Length: 335
Image (cartoon, rainbow, N blue to C red):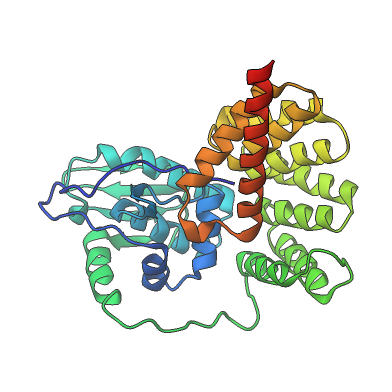
C-alpha cells in the first residue's frame, strides 16, 4: 500500500489565516479515532494526508473536513464504498468553492451530500442522513481540542456495528504471530471479520482483510473467494486487486500476476505493493530492465512515507529491494 502526497508548503488561505497542518496524532485526538485507523485509511486511499513538509506527511484543513465527513457517515451506517464515493466527490468540489472554508456548511439529505456556500448549494454524491456541521465550528473545535493534554482513549469492549467488528479484526490480527492458524489471535480476527460481514454483507474491506488472513494461514482458495467478493462490492478496491495478483504470483503464475498488477497500476500508479509485486514477477520472467524500473518506483514511494508508517516488514522489503536493484543495475550495465 502507498500514500501518495502533494508537495506543498503552508500557504495563506482565502480568509487570510495561515494554513495549519496536522499530524496523524493531532487528527486522532481531534476526532477521538485510533491512530491506526487513520493510517489504515491513508494506506488504503480512503483518506490520505495531502501535504508534505520535509519527511512528514500532514493533514490540511480540507483533509479534516474529509475525516469528519467519513466518521459521521460511517457512524450513520453507510458502507465504506458509499462513503468513499462521497469523499471523492468532496475532493473534487471543495477546491472549486469560492467562499472561504469558514463559511461552508456540509450536510446530508437522503443519498446526497450537500455543500452550502454563501450564495448557493451544490451536491457532492452518495451520502446519507444525519450529517450537518458548519466548517467554522470545526475550526474552533480544532483549536480547542488540540490545546488539551493527551488522554488515552479506550476502545469499546464489545463492537456494535460492522465497522467496529472490522476494526476489532484488525486489532486481533495485529496480535497474531503469522504462523499458527490455530492461534487464538488468528481465530479471533477471523471471527471478527466474519461478524462484520454478517452485519454488512457489502463491507468490501472486511472481505479483503479476511482473505489476506486466510492466505497467510494457507487457505488460498478461501482467500481468493474473499478477494473476489471484495471486488464484487467495490470493483475499484486496490487492496483486493493487489492480493489477487499476489496469489497468482504465490501459486507460480507470474504472467497472471503481471496482468493483475498492471491493471492495478492503471488506477493507482503509485501503489507500493503493486510495484514490488510487479518487480518480483518480472524477475521470474528474466525481464530485468522492467523489474528494475518497478523496484525504483517502489523505493521512491517508500522514501516518501512518514517514518512511523514504515514498519519492520516494509523496511525489510525496502532493504532487499535496494540490494536487488543494485544487482540488476550491475547486470544490465555488464550486458
